[in-house]
Amino acid sequence: MSNTFQAVFVKAWPWWAGGLAIGLLVPAMYVLTNTALGVSTGYGNVLFCVMPRTNLIWLKKTFKERWSWRVFFLGGMIAGGFLSARLASRPLVTTGMGALTASVSTGSAALVLFLGGLLLGVGARVAGGCTSGHSIHGTANLHLGSIVATAVFFVAGVITTRAVVLPLLGGVGP
Amino acid sequence: MRSLVESKWIYGLLGAFFGFALSRSGATEYDLIHQMFTGQNLKIVYLMGSAVVVAALGMRALKLLGNRTITGQEIKVHQKPLHWGNVVGGLVFGTGWALSGACPGTVLGQIGEGKALALFTVAGLIAGTYIYTLLVERWPGLSS
Image 1 (cartoon, rainbow over the protein chains, first blue to last red):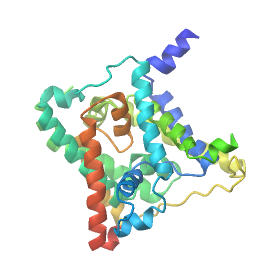
Image 2 (cartoon, rainbow over the protein chains, first blue to last red):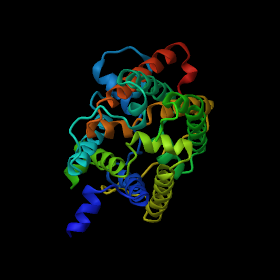
Image 3 (cartoon, chains in turn brown, blue):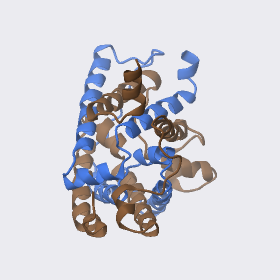
């Protein structure tokens, strides 16, 4: 029992355990709530929470409710990460970000992460979804747009890593 | 159970499960995302691939069981049709994925884990979504 507890709550999961858990989440969300797994639209909902009286067309059209399910889902994800790190006894706060902070200053890392986040935000909306809504939910349901988007995500990721990230890390990489 | 699934707290629980699973399996590690793109370590590819297979089988099973939710509603899956935005937005998204070593979901797990710099990624995501809303004002065709 103690070993099972260690494997589930303390040690890192093997890829198949994560795949099983995340894969089961998709039908589980339909059975329990009849909703499609997706995260990135939630960031628009966060904007709508901050500016409920906005006249911006997309926000008004997409969000009918200030505190929709998406806000709860995003908040839950933060809680899940918190729980995971607590059970593994990781430090409460760290300024480390793997090979990035091992290679560049904290300030430069923050700038790169902000820029990366900016592109994730614009890109997910133009693409109509992210790695959850397209790559997991959409691909599993054989949506053509999702399969194409996922392939393009990977192509752009590999190109950017070779052209920008590896030179940035200066070969100090992992 | 019925009152739980009809309240919004169920989404908090489902989100916590997702964030926990992403964190446990290493999807919130910058290095694992980076090493996936360099080809050094494909754990995240296997993770995503197996998640897709399990989700597809699960959706198939739901269909065989009559496509009903726990409260008896009919399950409806909205199609995401092919759109030029999948390619253009996908290129922008993939670039952001490689730069930040995170995606809109895993960055939330990073925040919970206490990775302070992930706050910059989230700030970028919110700002990027805001930029999109401004772009749509001018070019409504951007909205898929």
